[in-house]
Image (cartoon, rainbow over all chains, first blue to last red; front, side, top):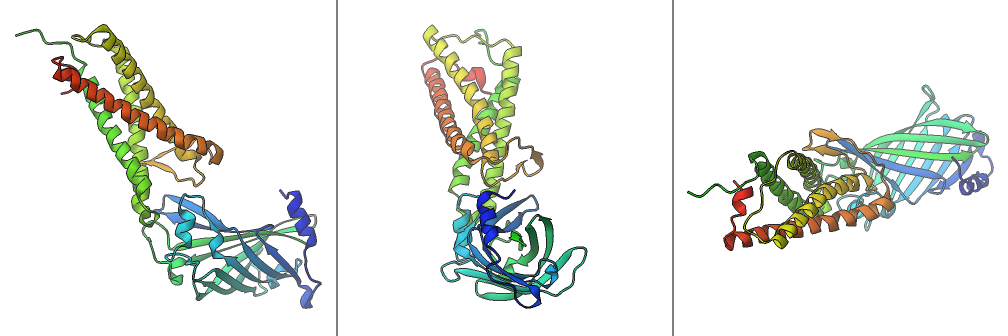
Length: 184
Length: 179
C-alpha cells in the first residue's frame, strides 16, 4: 500500500518534461524505491538486505517501458542486513570496501523487446571499481490509477567483483531486486 | 554388608547424566558462537545450530525426567537434616523450572531475531518456527534467555558443589544419582 508520504513524493515526479520518444525522466531514491539483494547459505536458507541510500534516474515511456534506460548509484556504506555485525562485514574490505569504493553503479538500457511482459535491461555494473556487463529483467507489476509499479531482478557473481571471501557459507550468486512505483 | 541405600532408577540416572553433559555443551557453545567473529561465518553458523540443537535436546531430556519423576517413586534422602532436605527439594524444583524455561526462551529468541535463520536440528531435521521476526520481542527475549541461562549454570554449579560437600561429609548422595 502507498502511504501518504510516498504518494506526495510520487506526485512530484516526473521531475522534467517529456523528452524525445515520449520518454519521461524520473528521479527517485530510497523514499519511493527499494534495492534489495539476497544470498543463499549452504542451500539451507536465504538472507536478504537492502541499500538504504541510492539515487536513480529512469528514462521511460510508461506506455512502452521496453525502451527504458536507467542509471542508479548506491551508497555502499548504507548497505543494511538484519544480522548483528552484518553491516560492518559488508562494509569491510572483503566485501564493498566502502572506504575505497563509496558507491556502486548500474547503467542499463532496455532493447525494445519484451517477452511475456518482461523486458531485459542490459548494461554495466560497477562494484569495487570493477565494471562488468550486467543484465536485469524488468516488468510492469501493476498499474493502479496514476501509479505504475515496476520490478527488476538480476543475478551477479560477487566473485567477479573481487568479493571472494567465505564462499563456503555465502553463495557466489547474489540476487538483486529493484522495486519502484512511479506516477504515470 | 549394610543394606543398599535407595537410588534413583537407572533411566533417571542416565537421563540426569545426559542432561548435565548437554547443559555444559550448550553453554560452552553459547560463549563460542557469540565470540566468533563475522569473518568466521560458517563456524559461527554451525556453533549457533549446535547450540540450538543441544538446547532443544535439554528440553526433551528434562520433559522425560519430569515424566519419570512423576511415574516413579523418588528415593528417600537420608543422612541429611530436614532443612537440607527441604532446600534440596526447592533447589531441584527451581532447576527443573530453569531447564524448561531456558531452552523454551532460546527457541523463541532464535525466531524473534530480525535476521531469520532457520533452526535445523543437527543440520538435518528442520524445526518449525512459530514466531515471525519481532525486534521488540527479541529485545526482551535475548537478555531474558541469557540471564535465565546464567542462573541455571550458577544454580547447577551450586547443586554439584553441595552434593560433593555432602559426599565429603560422609553422606553418600553421589551414589544415588551417578553411575
